[in-house]
Length: 139
Image (cartoon, rainbow, N blue to C red; front, top):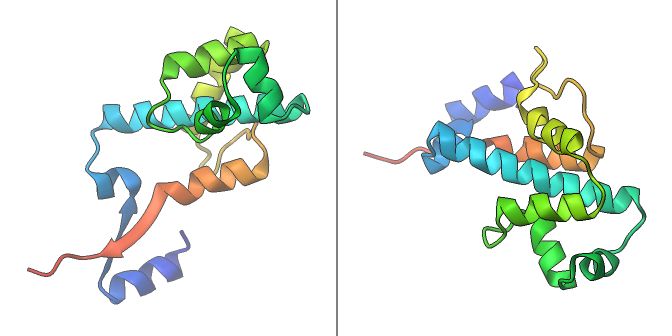
């Protein structure tokens, strides 16, 4: 978030922080969510790189299109195990999966991803989830 916008929000009585701060997540919980989102984004990228529809992927996974959509959205009902097994079934290797998990933690000094491997829109969506502003509680 730009410093001018942050200062303006804080001056108006808003608290500015991360999703982790807002939801009061532990470091372990936040890391788990980041890993799950990274795997979901890798699944979507693998599907689009192969020019496959969600229906075609669902057939390969012996699942449904709606389940694939939930997997790509990192829905709470989707397990990390299911995401990893699906990536393997689409031909994604162990190294690519581990690289996807490492990407959110490779931060450049600018605060942006040092080596983005995902399409720009996915990276922007992930960054948009990281910083939020909410009203400060009145005491």
